[in-house]
Image (cartoon, rainbow, N blue to C red; front, side, top):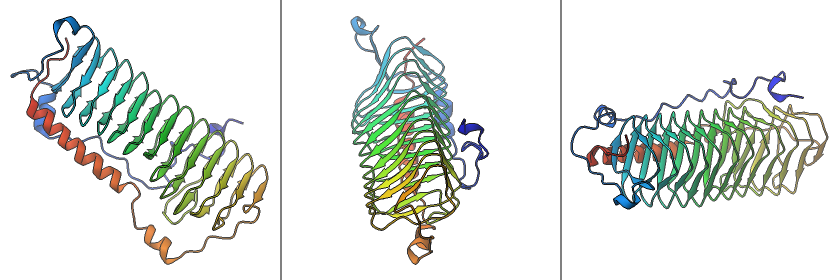
Amino acid sequence: MDLANSAIPSAQQNTATGRGVKPARRRTAAVAALTTTLAGAATFLAAPAAHAALTTHCVGTAGAVTVPNNLVVPAGESCDLTGTVINGDVTVFEGSDLLLQDVTINGSVTVRENGFLDAAGSSVSGSVTLANAFGTYAYDSELSGATATDSGFFYSFDSDITGDVATQNSEVLVESSWVEGSLSSEGSLLTDVYDSVVTGDFRVSGAEQGSVLCSTEVDGDAAFVGNSQILQVGAAQPYGGCGTNVFGGGLSFEGNSADGYVSNNIVRGDLSCTDNDPAPRGTDNRVRGESLGQCAELAPVQASARTMTLATQSRDADITERIETRSAEGAQAAQEAGPANIGS
C-alpha cells in the first residue's frame, strides 16, 4: 500500500505539532546589500595562475557569479554567497564558515574540523560530508545525502534530501523535510524528527537524550536501540503536540533505558519491545502485524512531575541558538573581508 495515499495525512501536511516554521537565515541590511555588490577592494586572490583552473579560494562576499571549478574556504575565514553557481566541489576548511543563499553547487561539500555550512534556498548535487565539524544547517534546500561524524549537529528544515542521512556522534534534528533514503543516527546527544518523510529505514541507537519522532512517515522499518532519557514516538507527552506516525514496516524498541512513550502510531509490520528498562508505555497504536514482548500489552501513559517539566522545554533551542550565533558571526566576518572576486 502507498503510505503517501493512506488515510493519515502525510507528515508534510500535518500541523498537529504546532511547531512554527523557522525563518530563513537573517542578515543585516549592510551584509545583504554587500553580498550582491562587487564594488570595492577585493580581499581575495585565487590560487596561482597554474592552479586557477582547479581551485578558487573564497574570503568575503559575492553575488550572482559562476565559479567554473572547485571552491575552498580557507581555514579560519568566512565566505558569504548569494545567487552563486559553483561548478565543482566545495571544501570548508578548519574553523571557517560558508553561508549560502540561493546558491547552486554542482558537486559535493566537505566540512572539516569546526567548519560551518549554512545553506538557505540552495542545492548541492553531490554529498554533504561533515567530519569533526561545528555543524550544518540546511533550510529550504536540496541535498543529495549527508554524512556526519563526530560533529556538532546536522539540522535539516523544510529541505529535500535525495539520499541517505547517516550520522555518528552528531546531534540530529530533521523538521518538515523529505529524506529519500534511510536515516540512521548512532551515539548522538539527541535525534529528533518532526513532520517529515523517510522513505527507507529509520534507526536511532545510543542517543544520550533519546529521540522524539512526531507526525512522520517512515516507509521502512524503525528501530530504537540502547537509548537513554526519553523516547517519544507519536505520544502526546512528555513534549506536547505530537501527531500520528505511520510506519510502512515494523517498529521496535530494544535495550533502552529511556522513559518510553509510544502512542497513536500506525504500524504496518510488528510492534516489538524487548529488554527495555523501564518498559514503554502507550495507547491507541494500530498494529497490522503483531504486538510482541513488552509491547504486547502496553501500560497507559501517566503524567508525572518530570513529564510536566519536560513539556515546557524546547529540544531544539540549543541548536537554534548555536546556528544563529555562528551564522551572524560568519556574515559579519565576510562583510569585513569585503567582496570576493570568485567568478565571472
